[in-house]
Image (cartoon, rainbow, N blue to C red):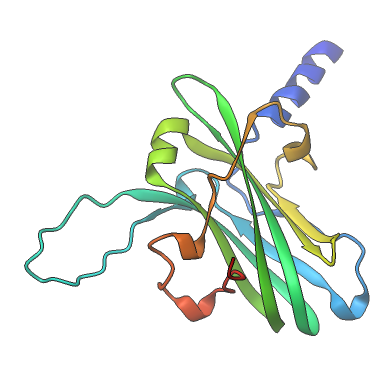
Length: 197
C-alpha cells in the first residue's frame, strides 16, 4: 500500500495534469511592495489560441490557421512603480503517443510596472512544438524582484515545486515571449511588455 502511494506521488511529479485555476503562494516580500499572482492558466486544450490573422491584402487567399499554447499570468503589484520583475515559466508537455514528457523553461524580464491589480504577461509555444511534443499538462511560474522570489503559482492539483522535481527532459529557449509571436500587437495595452533585449 505504501509502495503504491509513493508511486502515485512520483507519477504526479513527473506528469502533472490539471485544468483548474492556479495554486497561488506569495514568498515573503515587504508589505508595501507586494506582488501577488491572481491567476495562471494555459493547461491542455483550454490554453490553445489560434494564430491571429492580419488582412493586409484582400486578394490574398486565406492560409491554414494553427493553434498555439498560451500561458497567461495575471498579477497585482502594490508599489507605485516596480522597477523590474523577472518571470520564470515552467511548462511541461507530454506526447500522447510516445508518453514522453518535456519541460520547457523560459525567463522574461518586465520593467517600469505601475501599481495595479490586473497586470498580464504571457509565454507561448509554437504550433510545431505542440505537434511534436504534445499538449501542455503542467504549468508554473515564479516571479523574482531584485534577485529574490516574491511570488509563485502552479496548478492546484499538482504538488508544490513539481517543476523542480520532475524528471522530464528540460528544454530551455523554446518558450516565446509575446513580442516574439504574431500576438505581439493584439490587445497590446492589456499586457506588460517585456524589457527589450
